[in-house]
Image (cartoon, rainbow, N blue to C red):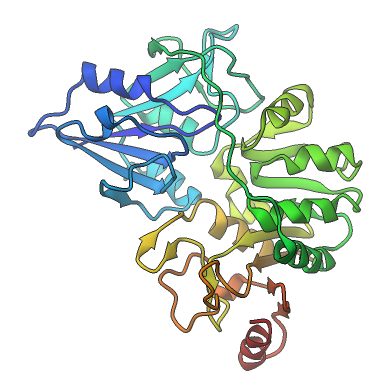
Length: 376
């Protein structure tokens, strides 16, 4: 079976995937697996329903069909890199959206590196879906001038969906903010709680961002004067609005990094006061975290969560903080006796925060369990 990685990023390939399948058709004797990082925009039925084509994903996204089986590859970003480097993950092709040729003839993927440069360098075939308007940030993955190129119409980049913070999210954010030390290095993801936390972080100074995703929080923190003006803003990708992309393009401090660095827990741990704030779907009394499944349904993937959590836990003065409401949208308690998946091991969780309080890991295992019980 041929494996074709369909890259993520500011824009996601569609025409390029169809072009690959037209040029190198899947057959009963030579089937094709389309492997997605995360997919937020719809994949056409003409692709997903093509004969002898199957789907897989590291992070199931809203763009993949719910009525067709998608094989969930439970890889963190660091494991994706390890699998590529060891030759365990073999790619026939990578299909990505790229911009016009740069001065050296290469084409930029715009606002992402992560594991994509490793994948591109190891794939037998690279298909670039060329679109105008793709920016080029320092450190972004690139494809060579001799790759296959197919033009695509100009489209608006997707805007990640993130609900407006509610009162519960705001209360949780206030509690998280109380845990953050002066002059932190912080990793911020997406979601209502972390969006609400941004407002609280604007009160800080000398803050540094080292994160898997660089979000619109960076723009707000910069405008408030909270960022360390001499420190780079580092992450594997930009995930946010056009305002974020414009700011990053104009701001000389933004640096995109490969996952071999930004998701290296030892490198992360070398940053003093490294704070990782993670969202969760549920936790158990040992502090184990589920961020992947609701019952048997996979709703998200590991991403960089285990790597960032380990780095924060080992950092001098750092903290791995897990944040979630005490009750899910369907009215059920989010503290579970048994989790459907353990996304982050409880041994590296330093604090759990709900709207009802904060559980800090201190003392014995029994004291940790009792502290968790009290906030649900």
